[in-house]
Image (cartoon, rainbow, N blue to C red; front, side, top):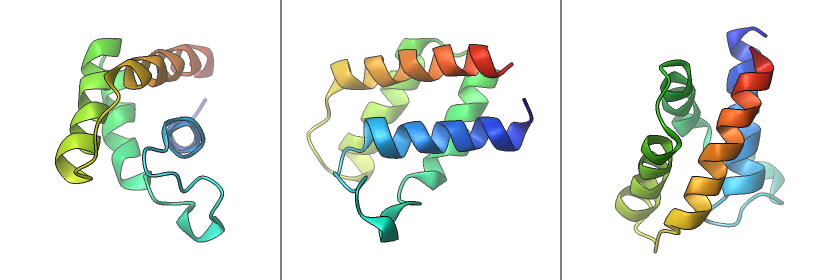
Length: 89
């Protein structure tokens, strides 16, 4: 799987599964989380743990979006991303 396809997979997961601000069904917001995807993909490629990825996602929600984070959900998303990343190799 090429890097572009891996990046698109991360983008889809962030929009459809993570979606902390609830924009998944708004066509104009399809790229809302794309800016976070390269860092997540790099973490996956570098072998970061699910906890490290979840901490990154939690930090985005808490520090950048200034929303109440859901660390448990972020851990679930990290695990999903890791599984998909392993399949896409």
